[in-house]
View 1 (cartoon, helix red, strand yellow):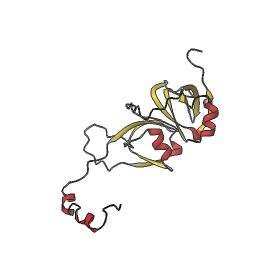
View 2: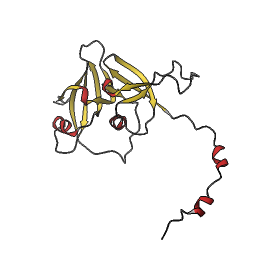
View 3: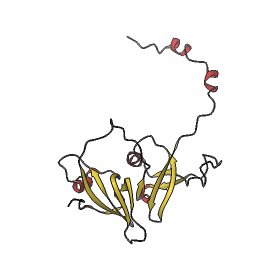
Length: 187
């Protein structure tokens, strides 16, 4: 059976005038992130990628578009202003906002506590790896650039700021100087 995609299908399309009555598309929703770079921490905005931040960063080639959020929530500045390209190598740790987890995307993987030294930061949290694997060895072979750690704590190695606890911290493994097992709270 042939699909009806010949000339008769083209004739049944909506006239072009109907598509212009839609008006301008709404702006893409924005997502606030906290980023940690060699220069320090900052709050930034990006367009909502519609996926996990670690997946979005892994899919990016060399840069991501970010901007400083407006000083006031109802700032009339244009949504097209202030965007800059930041190199992925400059992003050491990214803290996404809390988001409801999609149970269909959840992988039931056991968690293992690890510590990642990246730039001037030490990030401790839980890495979720396949059953039967040791986290540090698995991450060395896996090849992802960014890793999400749950129940994370971000500390400055020079102790110049108080540690920051967050539900998820996405760490740039390619910039990490060490990845090691961490002592669990019970042990």
